[in-house]
Image (tube, rainbow, N blue to C red; front, side, top):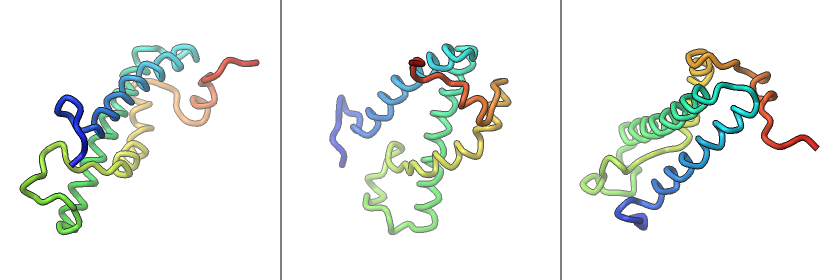
Length: 121
């Protein structure tokens, strides 16, 4: 099994730290670029949740199609076991444009080019 920090697998502590750092950082970068901070924070939070859901869905699909491939015995698998990040990235790629529309954010290359991540020199 994975090492634990306060009873939580290190893997999930990494996901939590990434969310706690990336959501506020992304919100601040969006705010500096002229996007409404609350909408950007909500969009990034939804994207994080979609990443988790898609990762779990791919794991469930894999174990359904190939049950013998998982290295952890079924009796030891809990709800925190089994995430496949490519599934999250795929689901996020499919849903992202819809999310931009739902949160009334401009999308596409124009929105990405508008983000000012580093100060101009």
